[in-house]
Image (cartoon, rainbow over all chains, first blue to last red; front, side, top):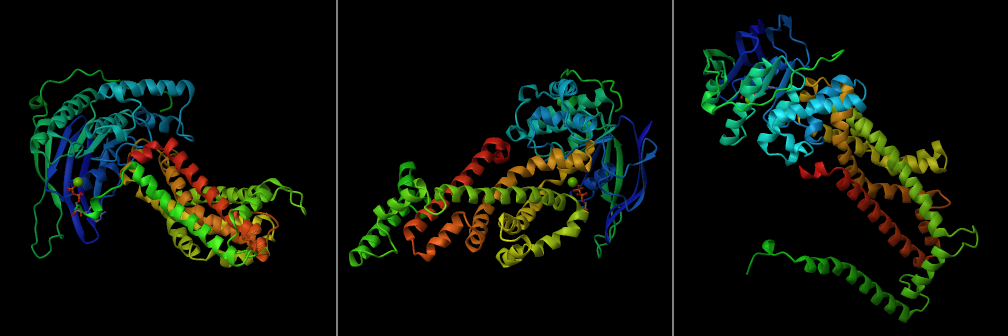
Length: 261
Length: 270
Ligand SMILES: Nc1ncnc2c1ncn2[C@@H]1O[C@H](COP(=O)(O)OP(=O)(O)O)[C@@H](O)[C@H]1O
Ligand SMILES: [Mg+2]
């Protein structure tokens, strides 16, 4: 099934073209990695998939429906920084999505509903290896742990598509390898579609089932902003994560049957 | 010889240095007072410590002949009540409008320039209007404090809201948050520590407006007393009152700082 279908996408800020002529079909469950020079529009593309920006021209379909006009839970996101909330503990960060979904007015659960949410949250903390930090505040976590938290926080709502913008760019190489194993494993078990921007070519080919390279094909030396970038290479990745070592067996929480959600 | 910028006092040294200006001030007062009194025993400008002590005892422990109250305490209660009401009302308005202006583009477009202009009005210049509109009762004094500090609170809090990383607001939306839920769960908890900080900065102006309003039209309060005693050149009452107001202001500031550290530790870690 096609998860994301992009047709004739253009994006310009005023006179400045950032993306042009992008056509793309991504099947449900693919792991796409996005590479390209800094400033060539990868983040912009992700923002469009998130509905944070609107295309200047062209259409984007999600499961054959036009993309909703605002960010919402069908597409989860992890940014390089600032994805978690500093005023909430680790566990509170993870269950926030459940609370917002289930308590329309207060955004807060109480009693049995809260206990159920906390249980689900703890399973996700276990899945990303943060159980021992459940009551810590995010500022006291290392960068890698904050990204684990951001991932758990996004995944608890079981988004169809997960968008990652250089999520491991600020991490040490050793930590990054651990994160590769984790994200790979979560991707396999959830079957979600992933788009991940990275600067690391090895990471792009090792993790992705598909590597999308962004670059400008038309250039005007007199007007560097006249043309935007498009997808110049669409290559199969190894997508097995083997170079990063063996998969750690994590227990992955399944989507619970919930009424009215 | 190490550079001056690299030399630091130890803990004990810092304590001595901090005490030094206070000690010097008191010493200068005592010397000046003694000198003036030696020249003219009826001098009222710098009363002797014994005169100050007697005045303090009178205002703090004896009933006033005219009203039958112990004036230091009734004045303190009256002033703190006005100050408390003014600050509470300002905090609520500042929080509501600060968040709305900071978070919601339509509200910002509508109100930000207006608030910017309002904040330029010298609050004391509207005091006569307040007396005309509200009479010379309690309301005018509380409203003066509100008029005086609310525009600053709104602008400061709106700025704080806009400083929240945009990623947080997007992330919240991907978790299904409505605008109202974003306010309640994301923005409000993160700006309350900022509100406390802004209130600490507003305490000085709030006292200024309170004392001005009390000095002009009131029948009790710390400001009223100071202005009343001025007519009698009663420095022996005015000086202790000023010291007392300073102490109250200091304690309020300290209390807000403690509340912030105690309940919003996460905000200090960053
Ligand atoms: N809101 C905006 N207004 C104007 N130009 C923008 C805006 N956002 C991004 N750009 C420009 O679009 C180009 C692509 O940016 P971005 O998508 O962040 O690149 P990448 O993520 O590939 O490094 C950059 O040149 C940037 O300056
Ligand atoms: Mg980018």
